[in-house]
Image (tube, rainbow, N blue to C red; front, top):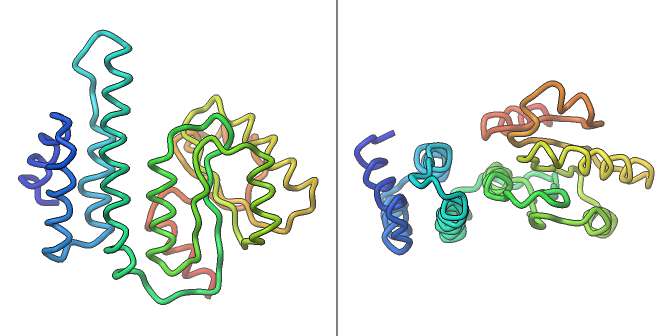
Length: 211
């Protein structure tokens, strides 16, 4: 990571200068930056390092949402560069979703883009997605994998019920889980899943295992 560049970007983000943030990252892409480098050296650290400087909860909440909105715009604006950099397509499809009541979607969007980068046919169908809509997508699109992104520990129960419904419906799909809430053994022990993927490196290793 170029620490000077990161600090310049972080300062713009902390000041909530959306236009300047987007332009800053797009200029890095124009200079040849890779998707992985931008995500892992700018986007992900800037989310992890956020600390609200106010003692008022309401202020912290809307400031965090503003920050997330800026990051989401950068991810959307990076899509043309993702298309240019993605590897040869492989014959595997995946749906990425956040289960019902899970509103934290930046991680899910990043993971979706990592799958696309590695040649998967990946579709992100949204945050707070009701179970019946996820099941409908599985039946219509018939993907090889369903990846569920879980950030909030309170949403583990909803995820458990969703997976149970998928299994009871005899839908032939492999279940991938990831996200902050899946980093604890007590959480994942409750879920009937096939794989845990948390990073780009995990996806690369997973892809290699498919050959």
